Image: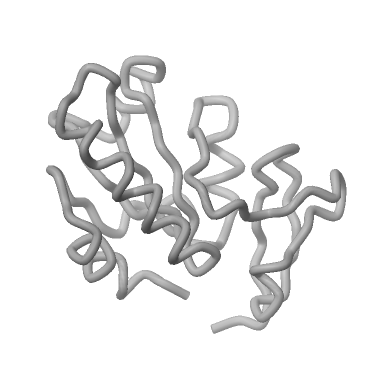
Length: 144
């Protein structure tokens, strides 16, 4: 593994080169805000390219909708796992109702669906509700 990663700031979308050992305390060189909050980011068509395609840190995206019962059950599990595993992987949520073009781009047919991306490429996919321990086991091979 490299000693540093290129990582998009979730606030201003500037690309930062961050020393891997300093990921937990990293701040954006442009806007000076923290790079990680321990909570999932909202993924939109406006920030997709920076957060998914231009960042070298793996990102797990939860494709969900507000009307979906299993999605509502998955939300606290996803948030708790983000609090535990960030910054070894970034967490993001994509509302399929608000961003149908992005959901369609990835062929989302059922929700919740989780996809792990690395430098813009899909490297793992899992559909359906998962418990915290299952989610952590599934993400383990993708952590830095």
